[in-house]
Length: 308
Image 1 (cartoon, rainbow, N blue to C red):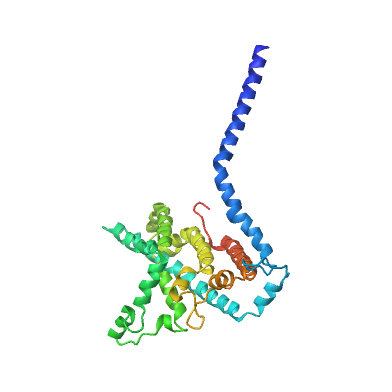
Image 2 (image 1 turned 90 degrees about the vertical axis):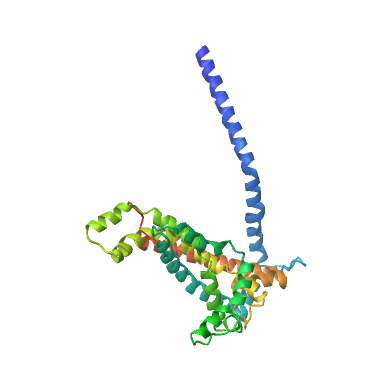
């Protein structure tokens, strides 16, 4: 009888301890859960409602159904911002992957002082976007900038860069490529994870550098490329700080640097058309979700994992 009573007492004690441990865990997680609800879930739900209203921050607004979405269809600047954003994403994302992988492979070579070179390539990512904008505005100045000065030295007349509607977006892409150090570090980690046994077996079979690169390195690096592709697409469609700083929020010249998120920000906080901005935000959300799903779907065909 005593043994049965002791077992029941031990079970009750264990149950009490589990409840206390669970309560302690929820208590420690409570700040994060509250923050998730207040700053993510609640604004998400409210923005859905606002997208169907004429809410303008200063006034409560009225429910207008799909009117905001209908107005977007007739908004020329809305489509201009889409064009600018897609133009940037289509060119920048592939180039960032190509240059990122190439530089990572160069920085993966085992030579003396390689740590210093890696640090140099990573440093631009630590520079604030405002400082980057000021630096490149000076370097790309058509009159006294370093870039056009160098081009003049070799007999080439440089363009107006940021002052030209034709060259403004390529200039922004060039600036953004200057700050891909974070992606390079991720590629370096992926390269370090590839086993040397693959290369040793390839050398035994007489494979050269190109064969090892295209049949071993790149296929086994595809999981990292896949990650950077997803993050690059999301980041490209959310481009804001650098073009906004470069143009003081005006998107000049001729709105060639008015990106989608910039126009969304202007509608919400400059023109106080929060309902209109919420509709734009949800369109962006749907587009990014569709693109992300397509990338995940296509990954089955080209992403290769070690051991599979």
